[in-house]
Image (cartoon, rainbow, N blue to C red; front, side, top):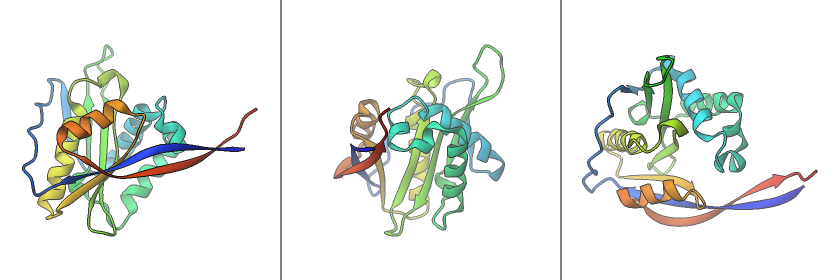
Length: 186
């Protein structure tokens, strides 16, 4: 075993400033507010969003469907879980016309009273449509409606698309952290 370190940024957003304007939800997509019956949808969207991404190396549970189920259940059972900041996007814009979940975000209030974004993810086939920005706006709005003054998230430094999005929307880096991962070489 050898340790590999992944650089991550903690970013914060001042909820005292006006929220950015979210893009309109594209035709054929639905924004779904928190409902316990959507736990499966959140887990599937999380898995499909992260399984082939760098973050599945940083957090191995994201590369495993059952790991995503466990993670989602853990987030939803936390005392600080915030249904108002938890959203799912679905669509039937696929050739089979089957309904699919294609984006997810969860929010919690951490022990410092900050609204913490948990795993914003959009599945690869649905990226570039503003869905991440829409999900993030609704989570931030949920925090604001609850009187929370700051929001935070962490992003892997190599995830340039996510980092660019957060910076463009007004998030500022407040801390650099390193996540150590044991890597086995054959």
